[in-house]
Length: 410
Image (tube, rainbow, N blue to C red; front, side, top):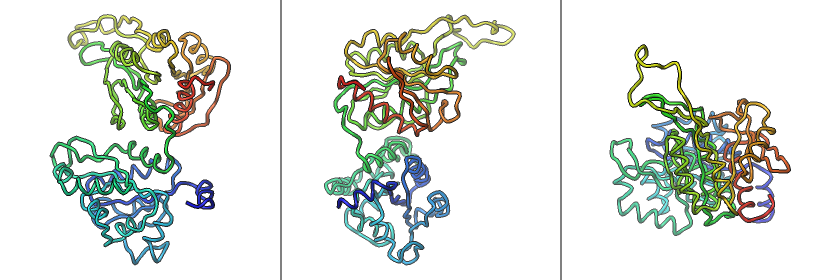
């Protein structure tokens, strides 16, 4: 890339051509596009005729603000759409990538608008494969994937799971967040500043049993902790994610330790921290748990449901901080009032290196939101961030953790 082209790119939004091919996972491409847009990308869409059998062009046109390229001879923005798109793009992202389009790419076949754009592309290309397990395992597909990788094409590999056809195995499209993260990394590679470092991340709520069917919990969704785990892995860390019950797919390349209760999270976090360089405690751990959970479902009118005696749970953040030595421990403070005052008191009381404080009474920073407005609270200063997408907040947190792990003043 020339110096002028590099300067021009730095002054505008990253540009992504989303190449959508025919498969049941096409609807996920819409979510990928929205994720890229939330990260500040300008997205144009190219589609095959088969893809349009699953999701119409109007959906992508309405959300992207651009016409969809699906015809070499009828594209509103250029009489030569494949060259226009290839020159416009900073990244071409194929989602979902069928066995057919992967084979075309490997052979250099250009017989429609999408495949012609891929042949003309002269920017990074990222492929998120999705197909039936037997199609994925077919030797021809595996040779084609290896061929493309040898040419520098990046892949987000399919996951193992229940497929639309009813088979179980590899072939399921990767999690949308992982695809978006891989795309952003291709556009602007993450700094490899914690390569090989072991990082423990806690995420989500804990469920404290009242009886076999009832529990005490909070509104945490785990989104922030999962975003941190994903970003730390992107930067080269060996990540252990200790997670309470959430409805989020695990980030790629992360060891996941599922737990339910605060006691289980305590034991798992302490064990994982034994050989770790840092711990980031984003979980919303219950402060109290029922003292004597019932072994049977409590019945109204039969059992006493008016009073539940509670006892304090173990303080994971304080125990990690007490045992950290030269290692790094970061805590979170989710508050509804006196945010910075309470966060600073928590920092001093717990003994950790940094507190990430967020006001969960705000709609843009509460549990379940896709953005957060956090402040970094240090012993002698406070650093307030704007409201940012969770991926950007995770990146900012990992920036500070990287500096702390290196022994520098953040």
